Length: 186
Image 1 (cartoon, rainbow, N blue to C red):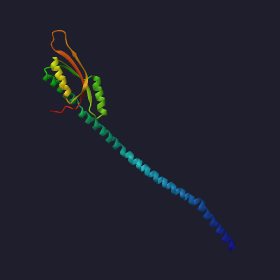
Image 2: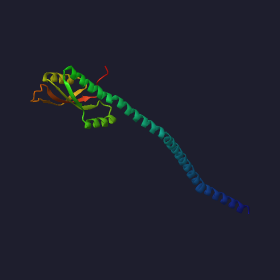
Image 3: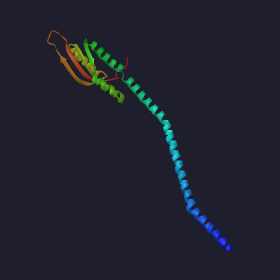
Image 4: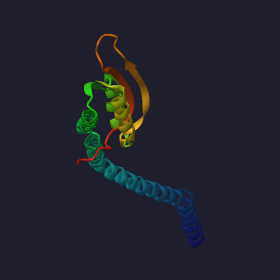
């Protein structure tokens, strides 16, 4: 009878060992793997949550930087630059006894300038047409002085109209490219 008990206990121990070896240990391994994956997922979720919490601040700072860029560009090439340019052109014309009729960038040119100002921090060219009246010798000197100015960036055209009637002065249309922001306050 003792042998029977020993065989039963031994069989029971073997069954328990087999159960532990084939069922409990693999389940513990899976549990550990699942816990490791869960911990990794929690770290990723925490990182994601931190990123999501930082996103409004990042977006706000990005918008602030864009606003500052637009502000700096508008200060860099403002309407003051156009006014300074026009005043300088007019001042030079008075020095040669010429009558300034018109200074005009086209509307298309101003619209292009407006689009370029938002996209670029490079010097901004502007096509300008100056119409004036005066004798040809002074007109030539005037154009020559304009070409020597810092803002001058190339001739587009020059038209001279001499009137047949008794008018002694010629009317000249002079088109050129100017670079904004080159005239400094004096």
